[in-house]
Image (tube, rainbow, N blue to C red; front, side, top):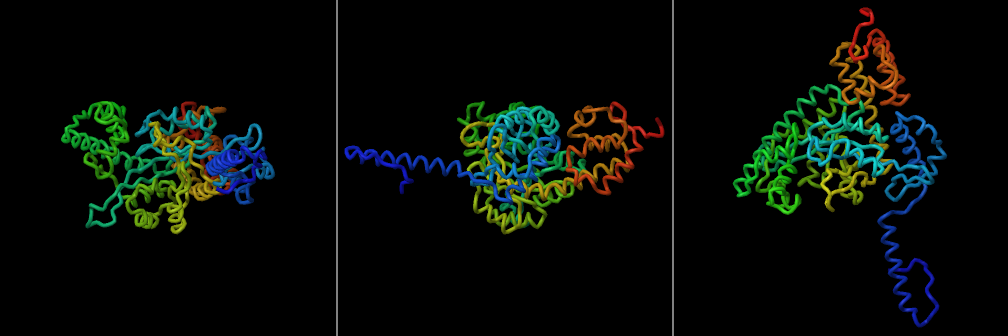
Length: 464
């Protein structure tokens, strides 16, 4: 390898030794540089992206964002990935992790513990995306308040992609990530029914896997699998694998998957997953952003991505902890899809799992994501408040406070009317520009006639 300019010793007796030593040092430095990436000042595009992203991240802490001037943002550094690196004491990295799991599905830790670990790793924005459930979001939001982290409510939906109705053997599982506003999905009952049906199928699927393992002379007990999954949690393959490990039939979880539980494996079973296109359409109809998870796990990613784009797919995972995957980045370009990524953290440990915050998402990629997502989320928030204004029922109030009841109803001064409620919520969820439109002003006017008592229940002002 060519040297990088280090001066060699002039002592002729040890010149060969020093030359070899210097080359070795150069090789190590070059390798280190390649791993860490070089640092350089932000381009104007990156600076604008960083300021826009910061504004959204610190909506509920406006002083943190407003105190940063344009010139101050421009002084930040980015590495070769375009990931912002802070300069000086007190600066922070803007780390997003858009794919994580808790024990509400197949993760090993509670939502609170996942948020705590994300905080320790420097994550500022975390999407909790448990499989086929959003039950961990309220707990994650409460924990995030303590650690100063922003939570994107999410879910990873289990689906099936069928290239042909006549060749079911070509079907393959496809996971779709859905990202929602802080207020959560609109028409949430539709989404919850959809997810509940999938979870019911997961129970049957897990029981079928246990049955297949029993026929393979691996007498796993269903009660053991259910106990590992926990009360109310739909069991997945990882819970079956953990039961196998605890029973001594495999040496580790990786072996359980490699021998028995891989897609098409001897103990593999499908559930009652809906078509991928149907899931994407539901995500769009409920105010979410639909992103294809881990496309590198697909057998035929080109056909899958083309069809899912036609169904309304917004983006796909391209970035992993080991960098950007060029082939999937190119596919995203071809179909005009967002390029995203996350750790897919489960808390299993070991070398095969990425840590929270380990994926280097370029600031421009995050900006592109929010540029597309924020209008969708803004419309969803407006629709939720409009439903509440048109029918001021406790159930419609619950749709607003579902993911943050304590903060919304108990935080700050008591709420006296619906207008107070919208004025408390919107600054937490939307920028000043997003809030200043005729639709929200009309909703405010309607809500001024609705009273809210200390218990969070609604009372018409005229009846007080």
